[in-house]
Structure formats: structure tokens, C-alpha cells
Length: 519
Image (tube, rainbow, N blue to C red; front, side, top):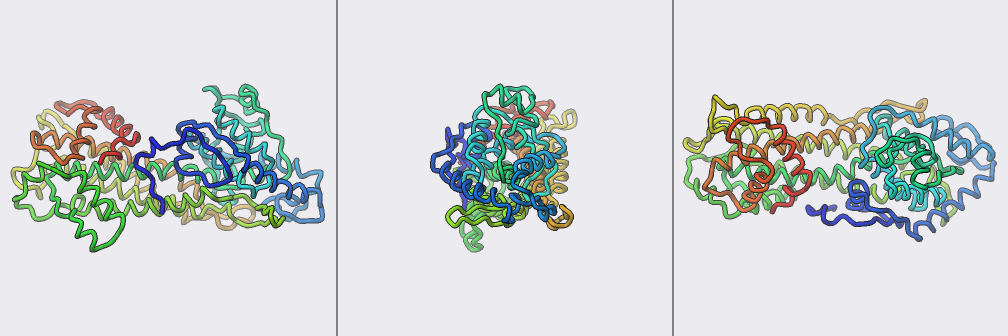
């Protein structure tokens, strides 16, 4: 099973070496977000060259029928291509498939795509020349970012349209951003001192037949999702303390009797965040018997999200060792096998599951926000605070609208949690008769993560305000650390002010991993 370190930001490598082996989540984050330099090892170059020798032998033999080498593509695979047309075929493939639309992919997703493509080709089963992989590394190290329209992939037979736009820059066509300027691919390469790639047999197909776009989004998403889960546990502990919730439902014996791993982990962490709580000691003899589910069942719900993230991480980790090209070259046997590793269904299902899990996390958080800005009928008399957590209710609205915003975000998240992978629209004249729509799943997930972070930021804002009302009694050690961290970025609300800036500051705090790292 995959366990991502909560301190992943400090464990990012300063350089990434592509050796033909699997990359790690940290490797992808390093290249995508920290611009770590990329090197291709000699071992990988040997694998690449061995596979290329197989293709070179096939390319001169018109009698053999090999998909994408001596034939056309998709439904056109019935068409034979002579040896003198094979190079033209590769250029035609990239140009014709570069039909994407919509806003460009972000720089971090594009860079993740590039390093994933390079790593896949470097495993020695795609049959490209080493210059392609070396040039991809050069482009990453120079900071050339191909402009890739975000829409156009159905997530099967590879992320064809997006990867074609990436490949255009590689051959000196298309558009790219270099040193903050939008340039033609040719200009960007020229200014960076990089020679455009000249395509040979099979290479256009190898560049665009892969799951690298949905994989890029997935890998970055799993890191952000784990940070979100751990941040949600901190926010939940803050709310529980502020609402004078019972610690009894966190007792280890309860969770051991169910045996769900994520539940046990979440309960353990919540207990640790709540240790040495003066607030808990202050209401040991209160009349309340049970708390609402968003407090009492926190380990069960957040733990289920933890388990879902763990499952998805396993799927994505496997893909980090994959070759998703077609056909695949097996140099030891001299075989070229046509299959379907480009199909995105494993990733599409996991991407949709992750969006559903995060929708639960955000919805769970919003319900606590609603309770935090109470008071509500279930609260014990004397424990409630002023409505909307303002010292001056009536004249001031306090945090009233923060909960509205959270509710709006959760409503949108629920819409986006509808799985894209359950739909299929056949393509290529029926040859590609069942597609994954995994890139749609990926794009939705990016938005779900962003809005989940915003909901959690609102809970941090409201819970910290409620804890201020409880002073001088202090919450558990971890919760107190969280409140103090929030207060570094956002002041206590004493009178009405614009809250958007506060929420954004806390979103950035969550994204930094500092909230998730609290123990």
C-alpha cells in the first residue's frame, strides 16, 4: 500500500533521474511544482536504443503488417503504409490529432505530463530514438512549457489531442511559453538553444499513445488529497473542541471493534490532536449524551475518505511504472505486440472515486461549519455562543455568510462528483467503441480539490473564532497549535470585515501543508 508522507514538501528531491524505473509521487511534484532538473541515465538510454533497433528492422520490411508502423491508425489501420511514407505518417499523425480546445493546461500539469512521457518512453518498450527523451528533459530543464488546450481527450487510445499539442512543440511547431513569453514552438526551442526533434518511424505514435495527461493530474491530485484529509482532521478537532464535543467516541476500543484501517488512523490522530485539553475537562459532567454525527462519527467518515485516497494512490503508483504506448516493443524477444495499455479506465475509475470521496469530506466539513456558527437546539444551555460568532450580533453579521459560501461550494462539488467514467461515446468509426472519459474525470477532480480546500479554509476560520470565544480555557495541544497558526494569518473577528481575503489566506495555508503537518 502507498503511504505518502505528510512532510512530503521537505522530501522532494532536488533532481530527478530517469533510469527506466518507476518515478515516485515526490519526483513528479519536484519536476511539476519545484522545477527540479531532469537527467536521463545511461541505463535508460541503453534500453531506449535496444527497443529502437527492433523498430529499425521492421521499418524496412514492407511485407510485415505492424500497427502504426506499416499501417495507418485507428479505423485506418487497414491501410498499408510503404516504407517511404512512414516518416510522413508520423508528422501527419501529430498535426491531425492536435485538435484540442479550451483553456491551456496549467504549467504544473504540463510539466508533469512531460516528465511522465519521458519516463514511459525511457522504459525501452516504445521504440523511439534517445533524442526524443533527451529533448523532453532539455525542455523541462530550460522551462519551456508547451501550450496545450485542456479539452479534447476521451481517455482511450491515449490522451491523443493533448499529447499531440505537446509533441508539436517538440518538433518545433505549435506554441509554448518560455521566460514568460508566448512564442511559437520553433522560437521557444531556438531561444533556449534546443534543436527540434526529427521524427522517425513509430515516434509520432509513441508520443501521443499514453495516459500521461490524466496520470499527471492524478498524481498531483493524490498529494493534494492527502493534505486535504489531514487538514480536515485538524479542522474537525478544532470544531469538536470549540463545540465542547465529547472525546469518548474517539476511544480506541470502539474503532478496533470495527477494524477499518482509515477509521483507526483518523481516530488515533484526532485523539492526539486533542490531548491535554482543558476544554474537555471543563465539561466532563455536562448533560449532553451524544453529539451530532459530524463530531461523533468523524473517524468513521474521514477514515473512509482516507481509505479511498489510499486505494487511488495504489492505482496511480502502478501507473508510474507503466508503459502505455501501443504497440509495445520487447527487445529481448524481438516482438512487437499491439494491445490496449493506453486505455484510461483504471485511472478514470480512481479519479472519479477520489472526487466522490472529497465531496464527502467537504460536505462533512460544511455541516460542522453550520454547527460552529450556531447556537443550535442540541447544545447544552450555557455552552452556546452568540449566533454567527460575532461579539455584536445584529449590528454585525459575523461569519454568517461564510457558511453560505461553504454551502454553495459543496453544492457545486456534489454536481462535479458525478462520475464521468460511467459514460462512453464511441470514436474512430467504432474501432474505439468504449472509451474511459478519464480526462473529464481528472479536470473535474482538480476543481473539486480546489473547492474542498476552500470549504476547509472556512471551517478553520470559523472554528478558530469559536475557540477564541472559549478562552481562557485552552483546547488540546494539537488544536491549540492549529489555532495559533490560523491567527498568524487571520486576526480574530471583532467587527465585520471582508472575509474573502481571510478565506484565501487560509486556503494558501492549507496548500502549504502546514495545517496537515500539525500533530
